[in-house]
Length: 404
Ligand code: HPA
Image (tube, rainbow, N blue to C red; front, side, top):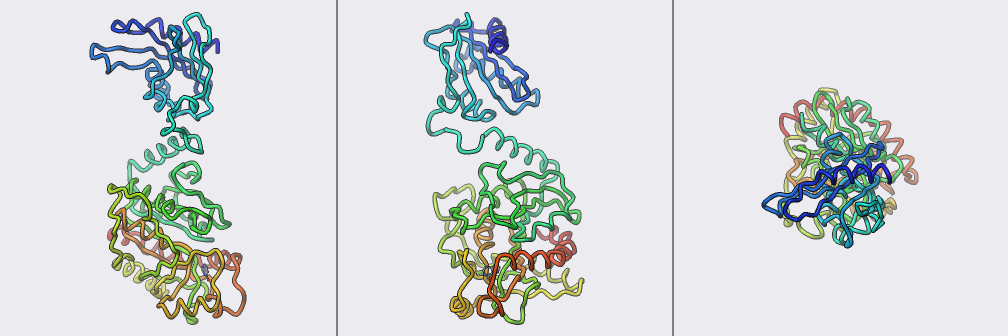
């Protein structure tokens, strides 16, 4: 408190307040322990004045600091000189709601002792994770992609995240560091984002995904796609472990998704509409891009692999289906069944990303499989097919990038 007070009082002595006559000093302690101070700077156009907190914040940010752990404001009182609404929001970019704020008078008497969270007006309250760290991670990501935006977002489904080892990473973050993204919490879904180069193509990879069956609302599953679009991606490659409804397409086979049946009982576009993202009443014909599919098929052929195409039925899960449900899905025209991919494909189309969907068959569906299904089998079979999927994508990516 003493060092903070000294810094704030010293800055206050230099305040430029000829119009109000009200001098204010502020001091911020950064996570590193360094203290940054500032004073108010008024202007003849009085409303354009700068508060002491904003001045101090400017020096903190310019020094490369990103986290505030303590705040002190010095002004003549009473009434105590509380940060204005704008400054509370500014501080909230770099401070958690628990960060203490003290308001002192010029003699060093503390008039108010509170926290940023207590001061913030309700509509702007900090949510969950510290905003400061989330916005820091996002800023890092934005900075990393600024030189060369990713062409593709790639979502690695169950057991497929080891493919990320083939990527030359530039930046890797935990999904939980980005507060607006749903965090995957299922085995085989590490919940990381890697930006890097794959086969020479800049890519933004999501290692694992969140699912509806984890309890996420469908609209939450749109967030990674919208982020990818915002960061410059032009297309998305969605991979997923699936069951096959065709006895001749067994475990280990890769199938290009040609269309889908959304039987999940929800849709990522349900909820308030943001016209900036895209239309609410979205056409889904040609969702799985024909050109991207053709390029991938040709690349696989060069490797001696034949890629089937099929219609994916998306179900809610997390139970595997009953044999009767599988018979129903076959009657409806499905070739594959899975618990993911489709919400992301819809969200991607809405925000203008082209979509390539690749299903990795991990089992014959219930009733066709000689044994009961399990998540362990899904992970093992996906892991076994991962190298083949990697080879196909590496062969296809340079040409896919030209078509995206
Ligand atoms: N059904 C649903 N989802 C799946 C399956 C399945 O058989 N296999 C892998 N994901």
